[in-house]
Length: 287
Image (cartoon, rainbow, N blue to C red; front, side, top):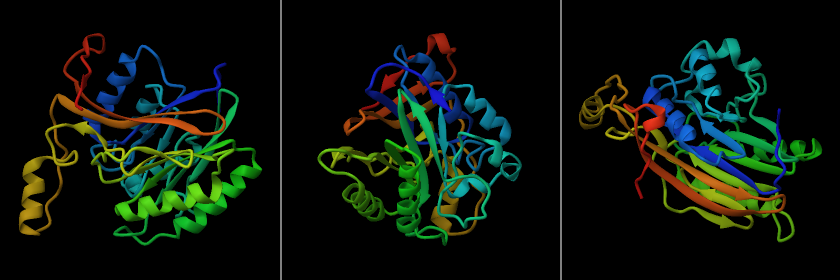
């Protein structure tokens, strides 16, 4: 799929895990409020449908917002209709390191301003469900994408452990980037729903350990407080309920890169009032 423009510098916006309707509406309102639209928009949507998984209806809804690529994680399979449409969803990724016969794809190439940008989604293995090695599968995928003409690679690494994210990002930046040319333009961690303050440019690659989440601000990583409290304080299983409130937070990053290197990464940390009409939305910077 091709996104045409004439400027060689690319502005990419990545939204952390969109969680439930509050997250979907917040991202919609935020994108609508921008006077200067990004060149390329990616969003992690594994929690977009009531906090767990992605229905086809919500996938089609999110497509109308101006998001170009959707990444996911271990919860992508929670809504069973995903198996009916994921093979035909040409901008949706599931984690690459599931077995080879798994439905969907873990990497895709998008054409943006004359660049071929590959996006890869992968799962970590520390404190996560058993999965194939991301070290091996991602390395092999990048080499294959290079053969297909990829100029840049963006990675959503959906993982629990900060050490695993940091170590994996450094490995890839050392393996594929150098002073003349950085293939890996951005390595963005997702999954914990808590935005980290360690954004940096490392060896020509934009990096953040976790982009955070988009959803109800007064919540426990998007879930309602009482059910979370009962589950965590008693250790007795309790069904999580998604938090509902008009005030929603938006977490993510804005990354600038050219054909050679990433040049800037900036965190997005905003509060949106979803009760207002799009034309009345007041986007408040939350630090």
